[in-house]
Length: 132
Image (cartoon, rainbow, N blue to C red):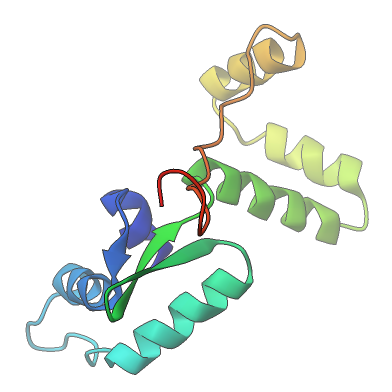
């Protein structure tokens, strides 16, 4: 679902998330069973409670949007995985041994201070704030 929200960029209704998921999974023979809208709403709410998705009211419906960038999410996953390793140094060494030379060059530039961190997308205005 996050993939759908990242691809859409603008806030979308749960029914549009459901349509995008159904479209992506295909509807041919052997296709997975179609999700119910209640399942989509449940997952979107869980993602919202985890701080990964934000929700805003639009008439009677809610619109959903990713509240973290894809890059920030992946970086958090990498840090979480690294935290699971009993030997962080060994895990890092193993990881660095498997990245491409372009990735290695990029890491060197980042560690040398040559690269600025990627900016996070601006948070939307909250209720009662300008832009609401």
